[in-house]
Image (cartoon, rainbow, N blue to C red; front, side, top):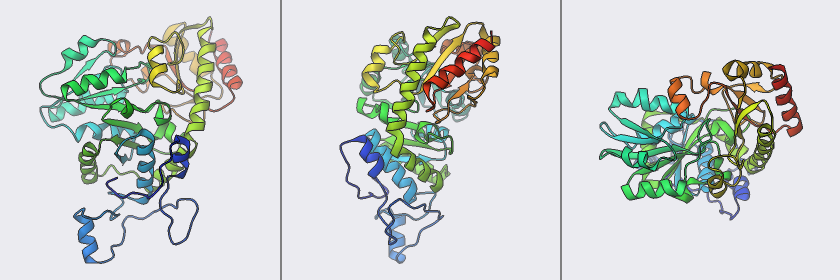
Length: 399
């Protein structure tokens, strides 16, 4: 990597790398990586300082640029995603913004999937226009829209798969070939899957974006993000990040790096619980619609099984009775956490139309499958029987 290599042996198996990739031991001979809470680092002498600033040698100078904790985190994530390099960020949205902003200029154009997170939509519609950067949206399954959406000034393609919250899935092999044929950079938001479930770079993605706030941390403790991918692109993104300063703190990097040690176990349980909940909801007479990637009824079920190891921890459904019934359902929940966050060890419930995607117009929400009564459940690690009992009582109470 560009910063410095940690000197760890890379193992064949995901789980072992998640546990064993670690910073080199200090003189204290510690077993667990310490927290490097320092703003700057010492140079051996004037020549060493000059060489580091000139990037002739690798090393730490300032925690806005690099820190052993952030480097360890990126080393792990890059190995998990099978990418060449990466950059940590203070939040997932900082990662999303910088993954694109660092690679475009005034007059350029971005093609994106229509079904995306609300804040990403705001970047396209409210922030990028200030820099004369245009965009076009395309529906996931409409090949003609993708072909017609490419302009002479198009520089990159941005997608989510599965999307938030519609759980739409894009064929990574197809979109990768589409981009390569047109010399476009492909960026994939892999937040819902994590690298344990899906690795977009293995399907041809140039960059992979994560919100470390979600499943990577897994316990709702920190805000963080990361961009991983081709070394030449990461170099451009790192330059912008170092100059503008959306730096990830050593503390948050340390927390997430430790959390990654249990990522595989947690994602197995999240996915197991989510599938059982989706199957229960699909048979429930008070539910109008259920979406989950590993339900055979999902429109892209076959594709999901092809490019995802598991179905993930997110289930969406619509309660019969529309918006009013949906609100009553949420109010009837006794112990689910009502929060806009997801990927927590605790089950959380959200009404996307009035929270995470409120900035979209009603027509824009409907175009990506966000009905007024849609409920998004981030299925936690509690016992599935307790999760289903909580859903059942809320459905009964909201009749």
